[in-house]
Image (cartoon, rainbow, N blue to C red; front, side, top):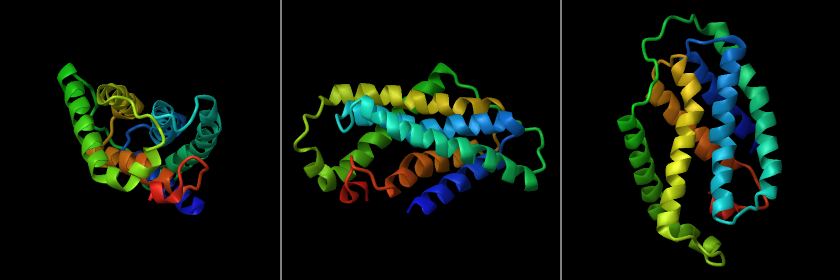
Amino acid sequence: MFGLYLVLNLGVLWFAARGSSTSGWSLALRLFVLGWIVGSANSLVEAVFFNVLTLSQTLVPAIFAAIVFAILAPLAGFLSSLWNKRSPVSEIGDFTPLALLLVILAYEFLYWGAGTIVFPYIAHFYESRALPPAFEVAAVQVVRSLIFVAAAYPLLKGGLRGAPLRLALVYGIIGGLAPLLLDNPYMPADIRF
């Protein structure tokens, strides 16, 4: 499963790099920030919030992900440069207050919608944990949605062709599917899958 985890993350970072008008170490740094925050850091915020991990327990998975993305980000940028003839990008990302509000609302809708669908299958995992009130969960998701925006902002600001599709794959695969492939002592396989 670790090999699949690496291939999925590399493939998505490569696809994001192919749409970027930046290159070299600047691109690698932007891909690292995006991959590490989306693939690890932002999920660890929720793990601490739901008392799945303590703050000190997040250190090992955060360092592991940082090492993985420190290797994959420059590799994705390099592989992208082999085939990608960079051209000016007219899609420069910028966020108005209205756009940020729409991102927050969309994230809340998707978070609660997916949670409602999956909860019957994972309820037993949380039954021994005291769950925070819904308004606190909603407030944390506002913060997490803004963290996701901040992670993508450097890549968007540099210009990213096809940003909606590329970022959908980043968030869906790097932030969703790939991390669930790895065995870990905190989340049993039946909960992950």
